[in-house]
Length: 310
Image 1 (cartoon, rainbow, N blue to C red):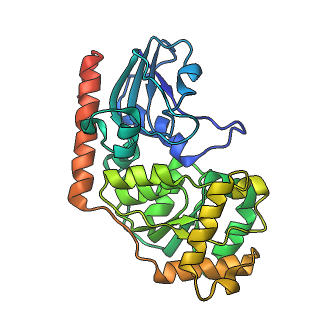
Image 2: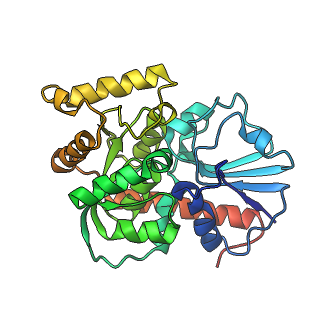
């Protein structure tokens, strides 16, 4: 049998992208998992780095399925015990020296097969922040969204609640990448937003490349007062400078109006993005093709493990 591995935050808070793992894989691979740590399934998450082998000390075999590269130091060598069925996108494949046919997509797009929405739209816009920013500025973001009539979607809510909230939204402003992925799977147009330098562009670029969607994020002034320095990404001077530069490029004439990090300034910026940004949505045929490829990989995996899918 096989144990499901995914990232757990130190503060034990629920995080949508990570929580998708038990919700998704237990439905797609029924009776596949137990607590035997000698065989590990690594699914959704930016987990392919030098720390992963050390996080799986008892594993004799590791199954990699749709995971991504991005955080921490890169892997210098892929352990012989790893069987890679797919990775998040072409950037992950290139980073690991893998063949292009293993660059499929993030497994979260399989939401489309499991969640049936109502199609009833109750909000013109929704906003889902990154888990870090929801943790540090939850009250502020809720207040901002309430003031302007946006649906605030908390990435710490249950998977079912978040999917329902996205389904009821016409356009999603997403700082949480898996919020955007879920929106794309549910055919809800989305706009990528950065509110601090903590957001890792590489993983967004990786997934967007897999879906043949251009990645052009919109930036919020990097001085939101509700964020402590650690939440603004100030520890990474290069990323902080890049965030500031990109924000200035998008606000060449009226940047001074938004330079404050007070709630009113951030509210104005969020409204402007909603009114002027062009929402993204992958082509339906591209989405179906990627989902079919992942399903084929799942069948291959289950057959090789002696537990064919029905």
